[in-house]
Length: 347
Image (cartoon, rainbow, N blue to C red; front, side, top):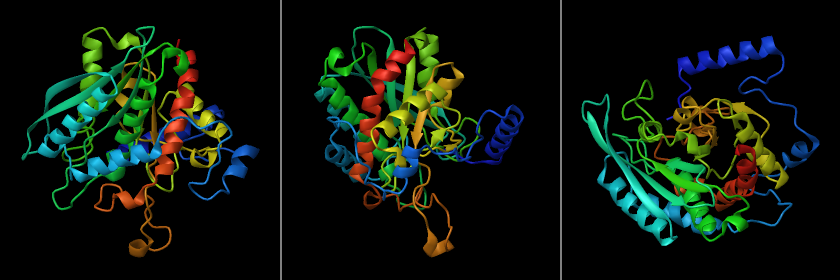
């Protein structure tokens, strides 16, 4: 998942070169001068941001229980019985909100000798609006296959799956007038985001690639006006920079909304480059954004001060005790408050 591979570093170097030549854009991982507002917010301890508007109905404790439910299934890699059980629960939960739920089963070819083919299945829940144009809110719901570790993926992808579920519940209780926009909403849960062997070539994003292929094959791609991807959003020390490849207008709306809500300390004025499920949408010309915290835990005990800033990622330490309901609330509030602005900009 989301490799900073040599090719990724090369891409970043190209971006930096273009930025230097153009002298009008910040390169990836470059700190942009913060405003007075964000400078003030940056001194707040993690998880203590104050809101300047009424909070949304997003229930962080309920969302956290959804993570607990997922973790209780144990490791959930693509094609596993545990993921099948989780999928059945996910479908029933979405149906209980009154949503129309469909699935997209497909068989993926992988480079693994042990699993040369895997049956995968996307889950799609639709909330009709007054118009047929669609805004997608998405997460992957599989965990990385680990042969030597018990990887329960509390943050990756338990947290984002939980937030999308709670967003679905909240939005389903509202009329289009209460939501503040007329668009149809699809809540999509991708299977097979994680690499089966190693994140290179096509060994990744199986579900999102298949989803976009079907959109294009059926002539439905033009209906999708924006795609909001959530991934790794539960870290107690939440920090979500702008993802460099994401559609700039989408990233701007979401980050500006977070700052308006007083959550600016958790949405820093920096950028990073991440490969994730939004990439197939961008390649298809569909506006997409990735909200992801890729600085998940430091391991100074093993590596000393300044050790890896993503030490829990894809390890057995990605567990519930590293997460915070407050982080889920920050992301949920931000997406809910940003949706009317996104819908207005997308029309």
